[in-house]
Amino acid sequence: MSKLSLSEEASRRRTFAIIAHPDAGKTTLTEHILLAGGAIRAAGAVRARGENRRARSDWMKIEKERGISVTASVMTFEHDGKMFNLLDTPGHEDFSEDTYRTLTAADCAIMVLDAAKGIEPQTLKLFEVCRLRDIPIITFINKLDREAQDPMALLDEIASRLALDPSPIWWPAESGNRLRGMAEVGAGRFQPYVKKPAGSDEDPDHGDPLPLDQAASFFEGREQADLADALELVEAGYKPFDRQAFLEGHMTPVLWGSALRHFGIEQLLKAIGDWAPPPKVMPAKKEAPPETRNAPAPEALSVEPGRDEVTGFVFKVQANMDPNHRDRIAMFRMASGAFKRGMKLKVQNTGKQLSVNAPIMFFASDRELAEEAYAGDVIGIPNHGVLRVGDSLSESGLIRFAGLPNFAPEILQRVRVKDPLKAKHLKKALEGLAEEGVTQLFRPELGSDFIVGAVGQLQFEVMADRLGEEYGLDVVFEPSPYAEARWIDGDKADLEDFAGKYRPQMAVDIDQNPVFLAKSSWETGYVAERFPKVRFTKTRERG
Ligand code: G4P
Image (cartoon, rainbow, N blue to C red; front, side, top):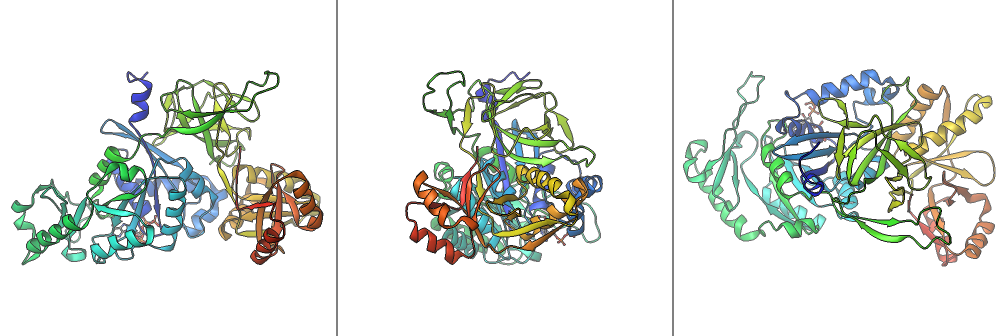
């Protein structure tokens, strides 16, 4: 049992995710953060663990074939008196709703940029999600050991494309073969970079920082003077780090390094520990107990991390890694309270009670049973389909967090099972996958087809693979006549009027909410203009 108070436990938590364009170095950085945090012993463990996992879960053959990680997870480690929860966001080209949803569970994001490439398309997309959810961002410019762009050009790009004030904490001395190290802005300290000797397997220790004016031996020619000149410009030209501006999303501290060479990693970890926010106060609603007569409207509530009651929400449901087990693991992000193993929690919308006897904490080294957990922590709750993405859980069962958004899918396909006798199985399987949040499912009001929606093409492949492996269903995806799905909302009469005119294009999602399937984005615009009282939305909050 912890000796710290509830608020002290909460305030030492740092729950963060890494966002990056594919290949910028997210996996490598994850590995080296875990290494610096003392969570793993040798670099390479993350990958080895990944491969072990893949070998065990061959339903994810795609993952193996494509060499990408399709499912997100979380890794927890303790370092320097703080508890770090690193949420792993899938970063491949076809990223899914999972990525977005994982960010709803993060309090801070590390944005990794490739020093040669700067901001790339996926960086921008992920950044937008962070901005939407007010998630502060720490920037890590990676791959300094390769020839990099001019550091000022990189910062200017952050300022102009993200409308974010970059505040350099360190400043690199050259890059690529000439990388000498980096200087702490405004502090006169220099962190040397030591090159890996040719033929050696071991990464060298870069040593401790030292005063810049005593670091001459690390430089050649004019390099040290150039660094001093650059520092002068930097100190005059960029705003000093202001934590409040960072927390409010106006400023990003910029750190530099090479994940592969374990350079700049301690500095990054320290920045996360010092500056990333502790678990935030979460807006929620408190419902009246079900037995209340004439139940009053739900009461708005701010859930403080130090609140006694255990509360939180499910942001992801993961199929069990072991294909012999049909149970699922709900990833539960705690918003408050002190969770103890064996505790009973209630699902707000269904009133179902769960005894959480075998919660899982995802320590980097392995999974362990979670004996206790606090706000900011993520625990895995095994269950048989009781828990769904967006569910709020609490001791009272009365707390409801603003739902997690469902995003309108960008690709809609019709799905058909080759053996018509298995149509019923297909329905169940599709519902199961939609509940996990793998894909979205729409059932048109007319006809018997199912329309499956996804944010990226890869999700269909994952789905076909899983339907085969887990449910024994051989399915084909076919193009559908639809290009977009929009949830509709408005007065009953207006909705009925609209639905009556567009019956063949009306469908329901898995929660029976009405959805309009448009044949083109032009049509979406057209109907929105013709039916101004109906709201057509791209996201829908669940729960
Ligand atoms: P991702 O998860 O963001 O997609 O990137 P990942 O870490 O897999 O890194 C992509 C490639 O960039 C890898 O090379 C990786 O070794 C390399 N990389 C990551 N950080 C650095 C760095 O600081 N410096 C340099 N020079 N390279 C870096 P790869 O050849 O694609 O894969 P591998 O054969 O090394 O595994």
